[in-house]
Image (cartoon, rainbow, N blue to C red):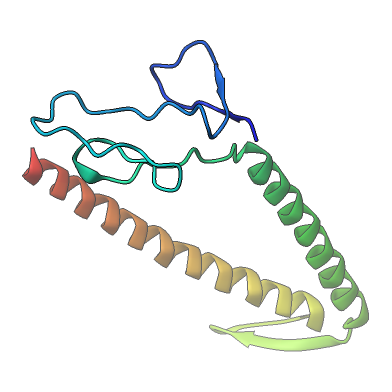
Length: 140
């Protein structure tokens, strides 16, 4: 099986088979590293060599399509729900009195819940970013 080298120093895009793979060695180590075996490629100081990760761009694009299709299906199901629940419902909220179809009211409730959830999630993300920024300043 032929693999590509993803090492930053390998600009030629050379390809290696497992038998001829080049294992990088840390020259700054005072002790000589153990020879690389076929089963256990090693780098200097006894660390395991990392295997090259496959290109994940296709996976991200596939995930976007799956998300798009699932979103479209949920939208279609939601529209069917709203169309089937057209019974007018009286609502009293903070002194306001109005009438809306039941499906539309449930849609508004779901949107309000999603907005509240996004507000709390955004606040939590900001907290974590500030904590990470403080941790980076301390380690410098």
